[in-house]
Image 1 (tube, rainbow, N blue to C red):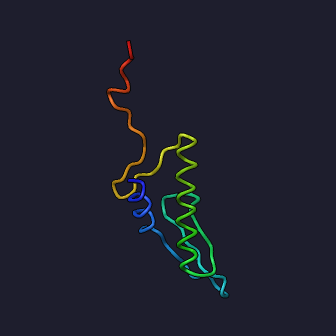
Image 2: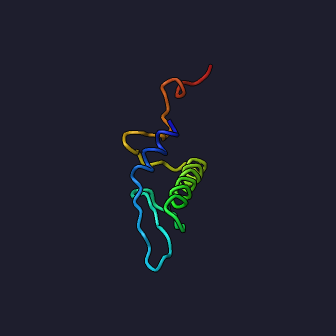
Image 3: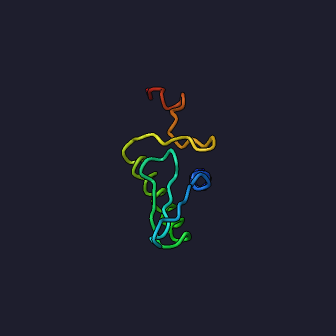
Length: 87
């Protein structure tokens, strides 16, 4: 499920060619702070994916929710079983 989330988010990525041969800029709309700037498009995509992976880990560690991407929801759901008290 995590791989599907990352792949879906990466399909939403937008890239720009920077002026004066400064390389490429990439970002994923809706995922604040997930961006990359590299010399080549391939390097920009790779860095953007690594940035996304780190962003997901940080948000999960801090108990922050993740946006739903293409119907994929990685946010923890509490089941009825976990709500029951153990006697």
